[in-house]
Length: 123
Image (cartoon, rainbow, N blue to C red; front, side, top):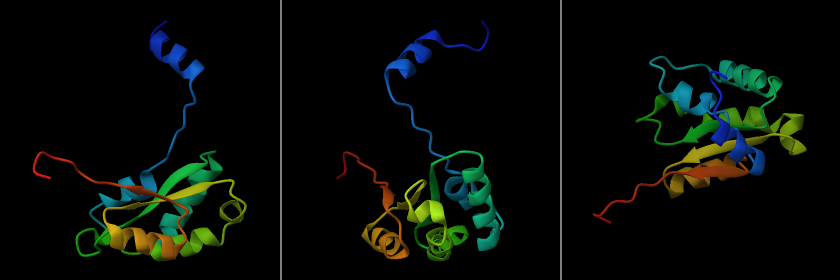
């Protein structure tokens, strides 16, 4: 059958597959124009309405380098008001690149943080 991958289907049948929606973070941080906090929260609402239960909501990075993510704390303020955040039905993930970002994400209410680091022969 076209478009099917039997090896993947067998693997998924044996293991847990978890989808994480990243467009509120990864997609929007690459936009040339800054998306308003209200529109970010509306996008998050639609994603949750579509059935996603795990999503990367914001980056806590240098706002001078990534101005599209400068409002991560305000985005998480809106998320904290959601019933699905308070009762744990949805996991809202933050992304951080350094300790300061982790501290900001925790202060904003992130319960899970994706921490990105690079390893090279130079370290």
